[in-house]
Structure formats: C-alpha cells, structure tokens
Image (cartoon, rainbow, N blue to C red; front, side, top):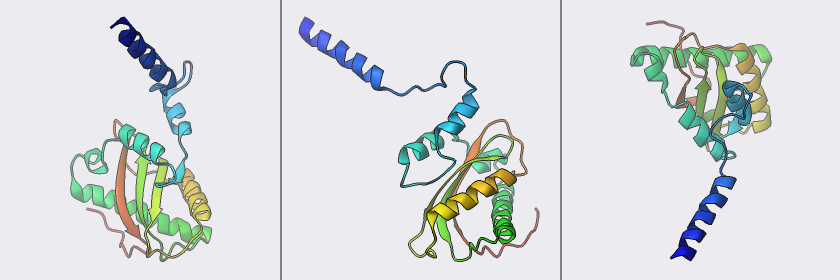
Length: 169
C-alpha cells in the first residue's frame, strides 16, 4: 500500500513539474505576458494550443460585449470587415476572393490583440505568410469603436468583398 501511495505522489510531482504556469512569471505584466505568449496572427490548424488557450481567456463573445444587442454586434463586426477592405485598398493588397473562418481577439478597449484564421477550400489561393503580415499591419492601425470591462472575441465566416454598406443602427 505504501509503495502504491509513494508511486502516486511521485507521479503527481512529475506532472506538476511538467505543467505550464497558469499565471504570468513573477514581476511581469500579466496582460503583456499573455499577449506575447502566443502569436499575434496565426492559422487555426497550425497552433491549436494557442487557439484553445486564447479562446478560454477571451471567453466573452462580441454580442455580450455589445450588451446582448445583436444589431449592435453585427454593425461592429461589419465595421471591422469594411475597415479590413478599406485597409487592403490603401495597402495595395488584394483580398478579393478570400474566404475564411476567422476569430478575432480584442482587448477591452477595442484594440485587436490576436487574429486566428483558416482559409476555406473555395478561397482564392493566397500566401498565408502575406495574409498574416497584412493582418499584423491592420492590427496596428485599427481599433473597434467599443469600450468594455473585459477582453472579448468573435468567431465568424467572412468572404471578400463583403458588399456591406456603411450604415449605423
């Protein structure tokens, strides 16, 4: 019995040593540590651990950040898609024909912290390295017009061009 107990305790200690920390390292800013821990832009299938961890951390959906108003949430999402299209035109990067599943991770102030995406099978063939670089440049310039108490996210499907008209509720 003592032998089994000793093996169980030893196994738990080994597991604990291999576990990753759930908190930031001592003396570091928690938000910047979490933000820097995972790629800023990545393909969903290439880094599933980052996708799952970020999804747990940014667990408030966009609709909840918009006080459960579906119309407001839709207009916020539409605003970002229009901004992406306009940015692509200003940068000379053609996003027409790109179809993807995308998850955006926002900070509480509306700034984009992470983008995870996966190109659909019928998407135009594009370099994921170039698309990721485009998203990184976009993130540096865009801020969703919202101010909430906690970070949030949205997972959706998008095809470009979007054909949205700029309208507000």
